[in-house]
Structure formats: C-alpha cells, structure tokens
Amino acid sequence: MQNDIQEKAVYNYPLNGNIYNEKPEAEATRAGFGHGLKAAGEADERVVGLCADLVESVKMDAFAKTFPERYIEVGIAEQNLATVASGLARAGKIPFAASYAAFSPGRNWEQIRTTICLNNQPVKLVGSHAGLNVGADGATHQMLEDIALMRSLPNMVVLAPGDAYEAEMMAAVMAADPRPNYVRLPRADMPLFLDGEVAIGRASVLRQGTNVALLGTGTMTYQLLMAAEQLAYAGFQAEVVHFNTIKPLDEAAVVAAAQKCGRVVTAEEGQIAGGFGSAVAEVLGERLPVKIKRIGVRDQFGESGTVAELWQKHGLDVEAVVNKISAFLNK
Image (cartoon, rainbow, N blue to C red):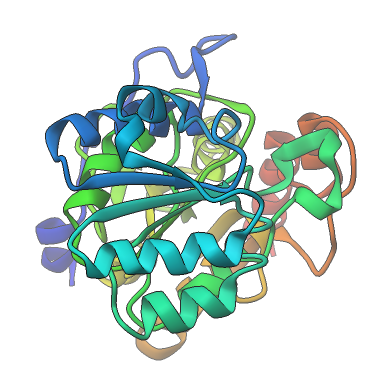
C-alpha cells in the first residue's frame, strides 16, 4: 500500500519558503484563478467565459477585457449560465461559467445535473465566495453545502485549491480535462504556501509525520500546517496531506496516510455532512477502518462577521484546530 501512494501522491511537495513568517504573503484565491483563466484563454482559443453579473467579483474581468468576443454576460440568471455553458461545450468550446457558489451550484443545481452532468459536457463551473470567509455578506452568501451537492453528481470533478498559486495553475489543468469540473474559491486573501505542480486527483504530502494524519482541502490545509507546527512542540508528529481534488479522491493517499499514522483528522471550510471528511470516512470505512475526527461546520448556517470571528465560532482557527486534534489524540 505504501508503494501505491508513492506512485500517485507527491512526497516532499515544495512549499513557499515564507509560510511560517509572522505575516506570510497572501492573495485571494479567486484572483489567482482569474490570472490562470486569462492565461488559459491565451493558450487555447476554444476557452470562453460566462458570468452571472459578477465579472469583477469573481475575477473574470481580465479575461473579459482581453477576449471580449469570447465573453458572455448572462445577467442574474444562473440557470441560463449552466445551460448556455452546456450548449457551448456541445459546440466544441471550453466554457468557464462563474458566479458565487451560493448561486451556482446553489440555485442552478438541477440544470447542472441535467444539462451538464447527464450529457457529460466539459463545462468548468467556478463557485467563488465559497465557505465562511465571505464575512459580512452573511449566511445567504456563505455556501457551505457545495461539496456535498457537487460530489454526488456522476461525471463531476470537484476541486478546492489551497491558495492563489494553485488556483492559477489549476485553470489550465481544468481547461485540458475532458470532464465537467467544479472549483470552489474563497473570497478573502489567503496565505500563499504551495509551490509545486498541480494535477487533478493527486494528493500532496506537505509534511511527514507518524502520530496522526491531517488531511485538508482548500483553505483548511494551511490551517493544518500551522496546527502541525504547534503540535510538534507537544510531542506529536503530524503528517499533513493536501487534497486539491475532492472527487475523484486520491483513495490510495487516504489509505496510506491512515495506515502509516493510525489516526486521521480531516478539515474543510464547509458542512462536514456529505463533505470532504465524509468522502474520506467512506473510503476508510470500506478499506481501512481507523479512528477519524472531522473538522468543519456542523449542521449550522453562517452569519455576518469577520473571517476571524466566523472561523473562531465554528472552530476552524488554528488554536481551535490544535485543541481538537490534541483532544482526539489524548483519548
């Protein structure tokens, strides 16, 4: 089994050298994706962009200004966003369709299911402002259920880059992938900590350990890295594995981490019901049952507040993550 993960997962994945600084360099993940989308458009004239009246907010404006003839503004009509994108894909284009995650897939899930997934059209859905970090916009705009919604759809690939660098690289990878894709992007600036290659379906081991495996996706992988640093002072050597792909999940990496460490913790900025932690638990339940702790939002909606306040309330800040992992290890 150890050989399986070495063949697929990336060991000694290079990290940004500034991540442990007091104030690490930060950028909005959506901004990185915007840079990557423009580059993907320059590389392939089949790439087109669609948006639901949020072109600047979702950082599609650079693409729209560079390729106005390849940009479609559908207005506040998310169902149309999905169906028009599906039609463009059927006509041979590579459509990137962007809105807030609360509205796409939140409002147009049926159109995504029927016109995109059922027909297996390679539409690239961009759900921006996902998670709690929308902040003051409050519960209506804090999409916490999108992982569960999208990973249940046949043919759909579900992605959650850890930072702006990975999001920028991911745009080109998505453009080349022949399947429907969904990528969730947060709103707030996040520390830049990744510095390696990007691939769909391949986990990356960011830190090696033996006492517990910390499996993260999206914004929470950085939190786990910071938690692992603190846990080391308490004598726990934590392995940190980053999953930029929730579906198809790198099952070999999940099993190998569990086999190596014996205990697993997952972390995500969304509902744990049906989310990333559930996907990991499903794999381990069938292949290698071990003790597991899932960290995320537990059957609650968000609310207005700063990112720091909301993460603290829902136990996603580094201090809370460390305390939860410590309690789990000391049981």
